Length: 131
Picture 1 (spheres, rainbow, N blue to C red):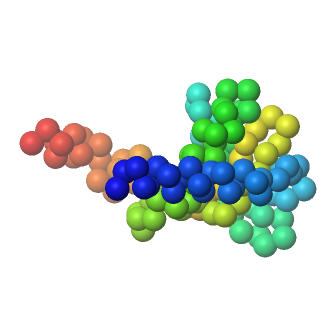
Picture 2 (cartoon, one colour):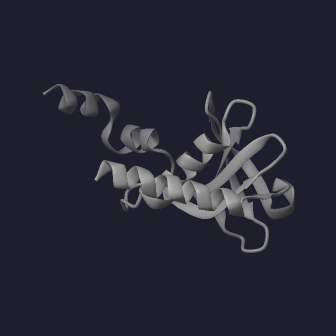
């Protein structure tokens, strides 16, 4: 089963590599703000210029990310992260001179940490985890 899943993922990566385009972010998206940044890259809140749809754009630096790694991340997010509680990838992916980029649903209600702090409290979570 694991071999079949790996082969399917490889096929998805191969097919998506053939249809990847190069875009100028500013031509298609209005970038609103930085949502997060780390060693993997950065995530920006953006609005699609034609549709007005908010989304999170995940930027992976081409300097430190191989095309194969990017396509695996994109296809895993698109095809296998289908749980209703997970942020879904959208069918939007492209490259710029400096980044590989794909779009996900924007978490407009904050991140998991803000929900834990405001709704449950971190100390409550620690207590539950340790018992």
